[in-house]
Every structure is written in structure tokens, then in C-alpha cells.
Amino acid sequence: MAFAQTVTVPNDGTYEINPQIKKFTLLDLGFLTNNAGAYVLQRSLQPDLPIDQSIQLKITVNKDLTGFKMATVSAGAQAPVDIFARDDRDALVEIYHYYLQELEERQVLKKQS
Image (cartoon, rainbow, N blue to C red; front, side):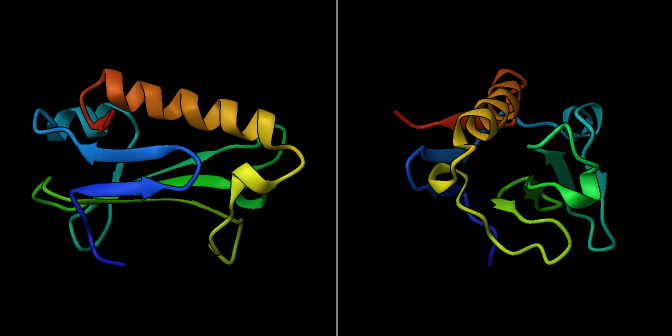
């Protein structure tokens, strides 16, 4: 999956990279730099489970801050998970929106209307 300026999440809307994004903000929010220089954030959507056993929100921003990838993935295999179709979706979606709201407030992402 290539980096994109916008990502559409089924059942949730479209998010775009904020033009005001700053590298130090990514580091403040807990993004880590991988070997390719991209910034990666992984957050558990199931806080009662260890991070390596929970569904996670994974966001990767390319090193020049012009594109990103965003997905909810399973533990271990990192396979995509549709949190909106699960029986426990209410709790997962609430935490998911909390993380995305923080990224919007810190000018990393913008949700399109």
C-alpha cells in the first residue's frame, strides 16, 4: 500500500494529512522512526489486552510528511480488521475516534467534511 495524501475509511469518512504537520509533533505523540525514515504510530484499541495481542490502529507517515497510511490491524499477523463490523465495535470505535481526534487537534490529520 503506497502512501497517500488522503485515506478513506469505510463507515467513518476520509482523512487527509494536515499541511501544518511537523516532525516534532509526531515524535511528541509517540511516533517512532523506522529504518526507511517513516514515522510509525501503533495504538491498542483494546486496552485490557497487551499491545501484542490487541487490535491496533496503525498510522505511518512518510519521511517528507506528504503522505500517510492508516489501518486497523490484528495482533501479530497485522491483517486488516474492520472494527465497524465487530460485536464489540462500540468500545473499539470510541477509542479509535479518541486517537484520531488527538491527531486532528495536534494538526497531523484533518477529517474531510
